[in-house]
Length: 91
Image (tube, rainbow, N blue to C red):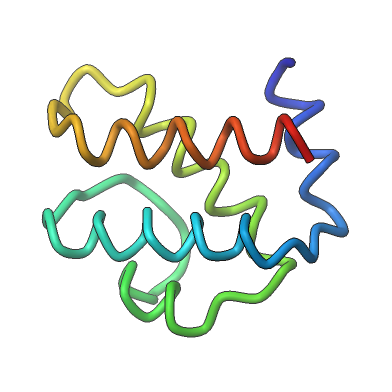
């Protein structure tokens, strides 16, 4: 499944398990002090606390960046990103 197809699936997502995975990944990113270029002025922790179904596509974009980044080496964070991507693929 390509990135465009994944983004399309996110448009109206209201799956509580996917939202939970999004929160976990954002919290890990905050905990591990990961920096990824993004728009907005919220921290990852603020994003996790205020997460809405419409935000899943933004978190998916972060997950794709984390998974593909050569700079991010943390296996726990890479696994969280992969879990989110798989959850969206399976939805």
